[in-house]
Length: 203
Figure (cartoon, rainbow, N blue to C red):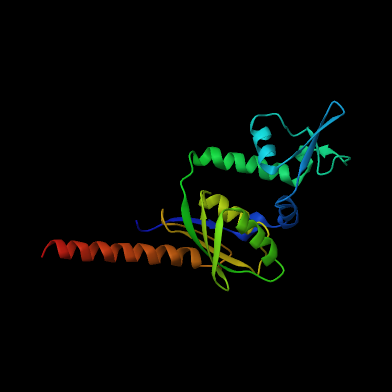
């Protein structure tokens, strides 16, 4: 493990106004239909729709619905399309993902908690270890984990994520000054560890 960690700090302002659309986009069992030249195809799972978007078989103007008889809308008008394209970008950015384990701690208000848990459990194997703490095993990049979990949070919510393998950390809305405080803690600890190791090597 290296010090200080790679810090990913997300201000609350980046994610305001996205909670409702993201909540609709994360329904596990939702199926989708595609209409091309007045012919309906489907139903398709979320995984297949992501694949079709990646292969350019579904584009922003492709007509999509969650029921066979519609109503149909251009893909760019539905919340799911943004999630599919974002997932594809994340995969391309990360290259071949490596499995990791995150420690996730949050002070999440009751109104936001159900949607937060749905998103969290979709990302991989998840185990709650305390009232406001979870361990998540996944191949998802920490930036994407933080962004998805933060989307439905409000001003009163707080979130902290730590990657136990890469020593990366990310957080949301911890308050003024916390960013620099956390960085200084790791920096000072790193220097103390170096001093101790240096002293030991001289013995």
